[in-house]
Length: 217
Ligand code: DX5
Ligand code: ZN
Picture 1: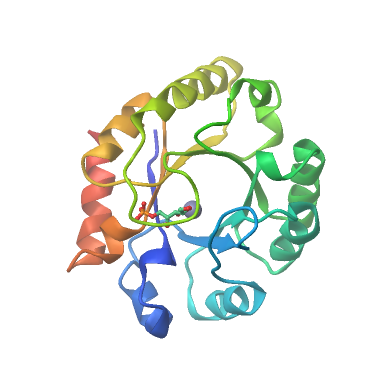
Picture 2: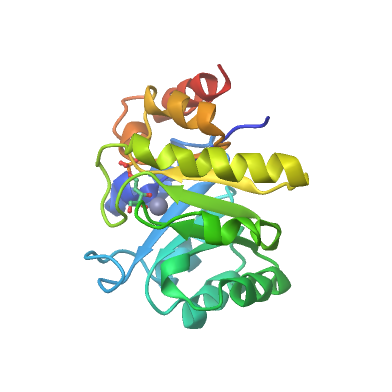
């Protein structure tokens, strides 16, 4: 199974984003956390920052929207030309309709679930999404500890994806480091977001490769 490592720029030096992106050229995508202080108690980036990121990096942008008004904003991010837009299931009554809109615009559509949100209601509609993000911490902040109790959701999603032959990427986000990545990979994850573990390393590129190797073991 291919393994993808997506460093989260939430842990990067915001005064030097372009050079921070140069440190992770061996990554598969850049994970961009958008927060609105309503869905989560924190604020981060918006449209103008994403527009500039698109101009300074060749890496695909993997948007993670931790915002309430996803029906309004997810298509707007997709229209910028990002690679994927992942919105939270808790933030919309019509996740399938929104995913279809995103795909129509030309972005990959991702569905995210918080640690307390069960995966079962979404297993029947997994084919409508390109990616399922199982949060492994409460969304809102970097640097938190991985929650192993979320792994049963990955096992269930991997089972359905394999049985139905779906090419849906299973992403984990929060507390991923060279130890926890092995746990998440064993449970069925193939796409790994890592913030502090990558940008906190002296050699971020080497850390990306180490994570990749651990996920493949
Ligand atoms: C948390 C964000 C994560 C965060 C992960 O709400 O969604 O993407 O950047 O940071 P680490 O890897 O430090 O847990
Ligand atoms: Zn994230």
